[in-house]
Image (cartoon, rainbow, N blue to C red):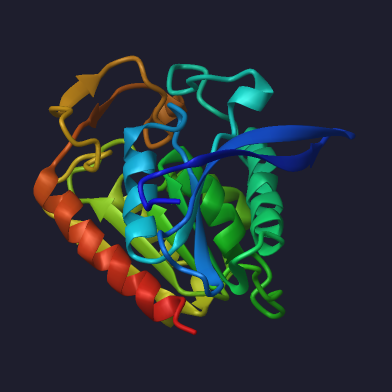
Length: 264
């Protein structure tokens, strides 16, 4: 399978006494026979898009398998960016997708189950943060993932985790300095609550970048109708759009981070 090809697969996840079959696209690196590390990608409020597919293709070109998971279609959702912004309870339900995906990846032929990671974007980044952080710092459970990438995550979702947090695996936290949808200050406030494993968190803030700086080809614009947890009452409005210098630096940073965290 060439690095740019993809295979449509289904990932089962239990919810409310029934099994949902999450649609996903599975990328494998070309001409590699040894078991490879794998990275699962979890999209933002608009569902899977060109940014997640682009990142999966890059990961495959670097020698990683990549799985882009669609958390929405099996639940009858398409876009939840508007005023009906996802609740913390909905995010907690979606966090189970991460557990199910890691378990699915660990069983796939040619995947090294000891070298798994996941990436979350925006709302998906907030969901990923719920799994990456623990509210019981005295006894953190070992993670199924060796590394986590949080890309402009919805850090307000971590409010429910409590005042004392712990980290048990390396985390790359990447944000745009001008982000007014998931602002840097909000994420810094979360990291200030980490009392164990703070040295495992690597933070990158890209100057000149807004939310979704990796949405290449999309000029920055203001979306007046989107939900925004950083504003009073969770409403409304935020800037959104590409900033290619930040994207290019993020590519360098995420490759370095994953190569270090997922080395054999």
